[in-house]
Image (tube, rainbow, N blue to C red; front, top):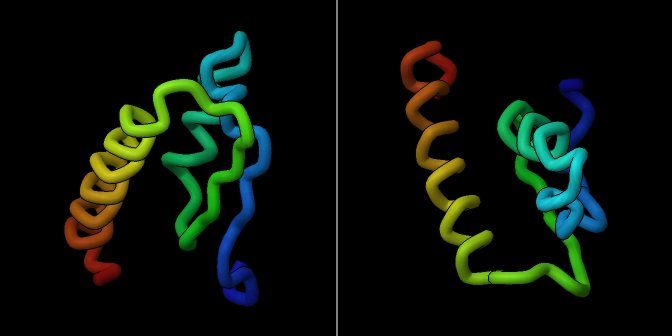
Length: 68
């Protein structure tokens, strides 16, 4: 995965569907920058705040693993 610079996730509004746990897991595990696309996401401010908290957690994990 060294050659992958970023991921594009389309239809992220599906995070609230029955497969939402899979979406959340992928967004948590991806180790590169990503773009989350959706034309119909509900509560975009809430989703953006969740993504910001997620990024802070990812930074902490990288520090703890000595990757930063």
